[in-house]
Each structure stands twice: as C-alpha cells, then as structure tokens.
Amino acid sequence: MTDPADPRIPREMAADVAAPARWALLRRIAGNHAEERVTRVVAFAFLPAAVLFGVLAAPSIAEQEDLWPAWWNVVAFVIGVAPSAALGLASFVAPLRVLRLIAQIDVWGTLAVLASIPFVVMPVHTLTTPIWFADVSGLGLVSVALAFRPWGTILVSLAGAALSFADRLALGGPGSATAGLQVGLYVLLLTLTFVALGVTSVAAARAADVAEAEAEEATAAAAADAAQERERARVNELVHDRVLATLLTAARELPGGGLERRDAQRALDGLRALLQDDLPPVDLSGEDLLWKVQAITTDLLPEALFNYELEDADDVPGEAADAIVDAAEEAMRNSRRHAGAANRTVHVRVARGVVGIDVLDDGVGFDRAAVPPGRLGLSDSIEGRMRALEGGSAVIVSRPGVGTRVSLQWSAEG
Image 1 (tube, rainbow, N blue to C red):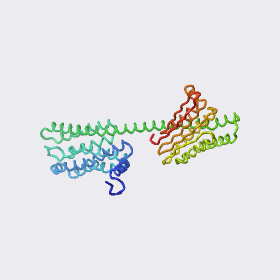
Image 2 (cartoon, helix red, strand yellow):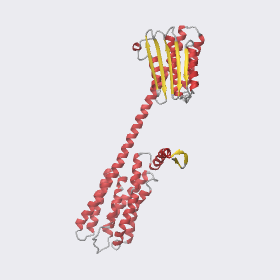
Image 3 (cartoon, helix red, strand yellow):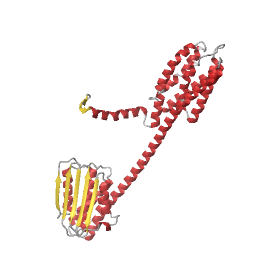
Image 4 (tube, rainbow, N blue to C red):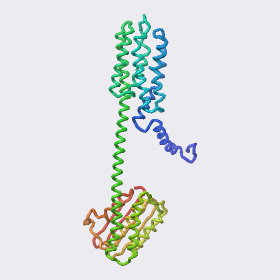
C-alpha cells in the first residue's frame, strides 16, 4: 500500500520517514536536555490537576460560603489554585526560570492562604466538614518540587502539614484535634509522595544530562586522538612514499631520469594536497580508477603485465579511491626497489561496491617475520593505510626466493 500524500512512497516507508521528524518536533518543543524535558512534562501535569481539583472543590466552596468572607474565597482561589493552572499552561512556552518562578508563587500563595484561615473565619462557626482549601492545598504544595531543592521541598511539606493541622484545630468543633491530625497527615503524605516523584524524576534527568555531556566529551577527545593519529600516519606515508623514495632513487642514480622527475612531481602533488586538507577527495568512476592505476603501473613498472576486470559499478568514494591507489603505488615501488630482476603483474578488479588490486612479482622475496614492525612502507603506507579505511584490508605474502604478492581490497559494505 502507498501513502496517500505521495503514492510513490509505500505507507510503511512513509511512517519510518515521518517518525524521526515527529521526534525532532517534540524535542524542539520540550527542549534538548533531559532535565528540561522532564521539568516541562511535570509542569504540564499541573494543568489538568488544577482543573480537576477546582471542580471537586466547588461543592465545598458553595457549602462553606457563609463561613468565609467572599473576598477571601476569591483571593484563595487566585493565589492558591490559579498558579497551578498557569504553571501547566506555560509548561511548553515559557523559559525554565519562569516556570520555577510560577512554582514558587504557587507554593508561597498556598502557604499564605493556609496561614490566613484562622484569622478570616467568621465568628460563632464551628466546622464539621473539611475546609475546602485543604482539598486543593496539596496541589500548590506539590509544585515545590519545581521551585526548590530537596531540603526546601521537605521543609515546605512539613510547613503545609503543620498549617493544615493548625487551621482545623482553630476552627474547633467536635474532635477537631483528631480531625486536624488526620488532615495534617493527609497533606504531608500526599505532598511528599508526589514531591518525591517530581524531585527524583528531575534529578534522574539531570544525571542523564551529565552522563550525556561526559560521553560527548569523551567521544570528542577520542575523535581528536584518532584524527591526530590519522594525520601522523598521513605524514609518515607521504614522507616515505614520496620524499624518501624519490631521494633514495635519485641517490642511487638509476637510469631513466624521466621516472625520477615523475616521482618528484607526485611528491610535490602530495605535499600540496596535504597543505590543502580542506579539499574533499574526489569520487572516481570505476573506469577512471582503472586508468589511474594503469598510468601509475606504466610509470613505475613499465615492464609489468597489466590486466583488469571492469564491471558496471557505482563511483568509488574519493577517500577509498585515494587510499587503495596510494597503497598499490607503494606496493609497486617496493617491488621495483627490492624484488630485483623479476616478472611482475598488476591485476585490478572493479565491481559494484568492490575494488581489488593485486601486485605480484617472482623476485627475491623476503621473510615477513624478519621485517621490523616500524617499517613505514609495509606497516603504514600499505597495511596501516588500508586498515584505516573503512571496508579496507591488505594482505602481504612473501617468501625468500619465491616472490611477493600484495592484495588490496575495499568493500563498500565493510
């Protein structure tokens, strides 16, 4: 089945594409840090709670309207209930510091209303039912989780419970002390339960942010170290492949000055590329890569047998093309310098997502175990270069008196 918005896209694929976009939108609304997202979600929960508590308190307000001055009922609702609703309304639009300020107003307003009850109750009245504001005070006290640090939340919770007990005691009536104790414990336990949930959620989110920041810092440090190591390897490869090899050839005064001049030119090109590191490697088609290897073979090993297999293939990424061609060039240079009089073959295979280059000779060969591990030509310029390339590999096989085979491979699938 296809997506109605675009008949060319299967519905399952459209869902997969839309999911990251929806998540990105939610992150933009709720914030990029875990602490911010959790704080906003907790703040939003106060909106439905304030509406629900207000509706539930309405019958008690109507029943007790002759017990309190009318203005007090209005003020108590404005500073004791409305800030909770405002906290929920502003949860996803206001900065965090504004949300914390609203939460503080909610807390102090609730405590002020609780403290005023013994002074505004109409005389000659005793209350036999719970104070209407006691039913909603827990909402304002719970917002302390967003307003203060843990110790402040505990102190505010204790203060709210003590004031609730004092209010019920001041209003008198039969069993007022027992009723006051019940109200105080109810407020304390309700407040502490939800405060604990809010505080631990925010604290866990803050810890997740710290862990994420530390992980990003460690990743950046590891990436910097890896980049430094790659740059060191590049310099070693360049110095060995271009500069030292050219100087060594010139020092031996081998015939064929054109070859030395071409090596020197490639050395200069490599140095220029190193100085222009901001230029990205150029992708090569399979045919262009093949001709590039053939041109290097003609320069370095003109007597070698060159053959190839070329299939329909996508372009080879520039980084992969540069690495495998440079490694093959170093293998040819090693054969020219060390194999002596020998028959040489260079075979190139380019297919979809795969490049392979083999450089073979039947020259003097060498004992691989006897080669020092720090030799730049083998360890860095060939094996290290291909190992650093994702999907790259190099196999060097040689025996004294038999010859050497260098097999280079790159696969797009790693």
